[in-house]
Image (cartoon, rainbow, N blue to C red):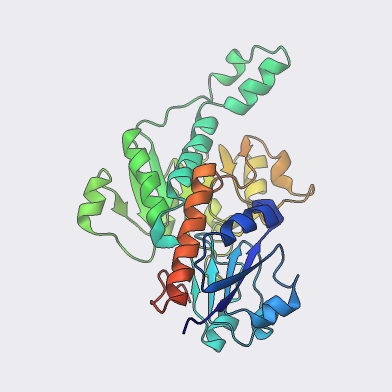
Length: 325
């Protein structure tokens, strides 16, 4: 006898909402009954009856978990999982999974990282703005235009995405150092141009570019605070395509306004979307993008397939992949 499992697919409006959710629902096998919502508590009955919650950046709080007595799995359609209350899920014995091993987002996040780095190095935003205002800015900008070649890239978090960024750094003739709780195998370091595992503080001191690829947890929140930002060279750039709260945004704005850093490239903010009061919006030499690093047409398809595949395998009785809690 086939057992029907109820799946609540939470797809926030800023990642496609009901339209994207409807396409997601078609990917599930017949033994899944899928309800699509844009907020986790939008349909209380569907939440109460849910066996599986698949969420694309829609928060799953302790209250949501308590309201779903039959919940067996929370599947995040992303590498990040900071929008799920892991403690509440753990207390209930409900596994929480992401799509980490799928590599679904790694190509575009790595490309966006380098887009931001190149924009900073080549001063593309001020150059473009100046030209649109009939200002031939070459004499003013040429002293601050730099090369990536020969520079050191510090990667905080050498997972699937961080490794993809490191591969591109090697192609640009950059040296790579990385920080994180574990060292990767020696053969991986060799493949990445002789990447070196160092402590975070050393990484900050030696890097010309610092790129963040760590998950957001209580331990990594404000990982780059005022004290750590002060370790960076005044010629260094910070790039964040992971989670906005990894950086103390006020401390970063202070450093940029004081000229203690050369610039920053940011694709993520805390909160999102950022409020007009965010000082980084007016800080000097910043390049900003609205959390687009994981949302190309190709990436969204891979993300959806990875999340559905893991949830569907779980429904079929297989152990889930990428359990983060």
